[in-house]
Length: 247
Image (cartoon, rainbow, N blue to C red; front, side, top):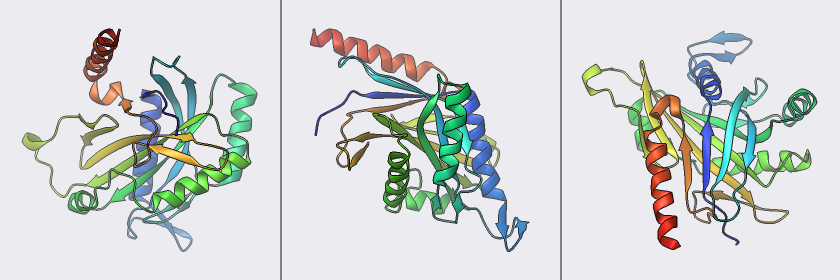
């Protein structure tokens, strides 16, 4: 498998807001037997990511900019799984191509909702689950069929855990758990945003990074609204230093 550049995934403030709104909406409200209720528990939701891709020259990192997030209101949503609707993705892509051709479909997102922090912590809910392999395959098949697949796409996971108690003095500051995972807290909810890169290996398969068969050594997530720019500058300085050493 050919190794690819490290990848930097940059998420705009606009995309972040839509991502959180979509996740919290389906965490608090559920459509059940013809009615909207708050008593049946949260469901997962999913949607598409729109932006642009800037490829490196072999020595520089690749960059992906997530400008806009669109929730799939017709997604088949359940407590522990979700399925995107193929036709919805196609209609949105036609709209973007007609009026905003500088943007393209660069990936998708889905959520992992947990009613308690302990449940989330026990499941390591901020990481892709075994069931997400089916989600990947289904989404990949649809986008290949619609000829929307590019050389790389991004998949974001938004994990939400409800906190029974909030102690201001113990509230965690936003931080980078790993290079591709950011954790933060708002009110009674703790959030994790995890970024993955998905690359084609041939015409019939793909590989996910980070992962067991990853083709990218590093996937880095950059959300200035959450964790500022400090981590970004520190990382870039390290990259420049290491490259200078190579030369």
